[in-house]
Length: 396
Image (cartoon, rainbow, N blue to C red; front, top):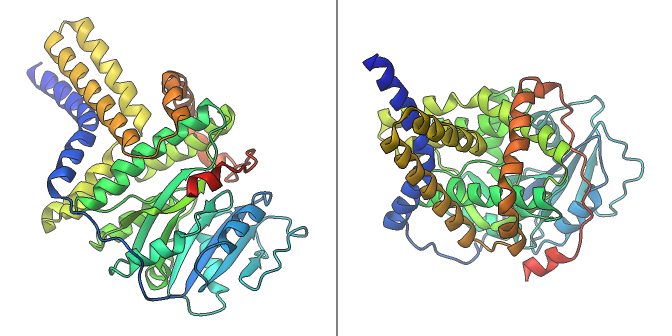
């Protein structure tokens, strides 16, 4: 009985640690980070901008228009229109290379590999953009500054392109939280930023080796990629000024399908966190240790739901002291979640949406129930948002 009770409290500790980890990371950041040098690099390397689309092309004109407005000119755009009808696409620019693979690829990494096989020249760096993204005009210039510091991998910041409705606002709040702790703070405390699937950039040499060594099928290539980089004890930098505007999920059915794929991916690849954590302990590497801990953390809604459940169990079973500890841990999480929002340029609509978090968690639970069969769901995400002028206001 004593052993079972010990295991029970140890399990509670593992879940509760996720509530206080943001606060611990914030304190470590305050104690160790240094103000970074601003400004742009004087070098002018050659970039390949890879834009991937699957089935749908309606948002491609917008992303291409935003890329062609960059205040940087040494680049080419490679659009991989996988399983798409491209008869209506005409970008009328010698900087845009439109590619339609002869066979359906159905994979991000296969689309990237195909684009690289079609490179018109020997690019120095590449950056990956989703078809629903828009880029800030200084996106490449900011990436270039970070690459000039010697990094081979950089994650930019994915800001919300749209805030049309409660779901989109809560989705944006989640992104702000992750970018702050898993991006900015992890990187500035000496570890690495997690990768977000788009708005990320690499040296072409590094990414080419990754594609040759890893055949990633289905969703989650960014999870495999970041683990591969960390196992080499390289760091993934984070640049909060290299901004891509990402379309936020606005419909509940779309949210459930998207999140079911993401949850499936976490269960498939979270074990990589153990590999990196143990490797970090052996190497005495803060980079690997902090990153390994981060990869082992369950999705946000899972550890929040479990935390409330464990709090209730302790109340029912009479462990009131432990229940009080859970309340303090939950309050700590709430405080540091708000810190992430207050530390960013957070739209007031996002704050107003927070009251609907229980509804958002409910949709996430539905996603969890569907996650087992997530690989049977189409990899394409249909987007509904029409771009508006608020993006121009955000850039000013």
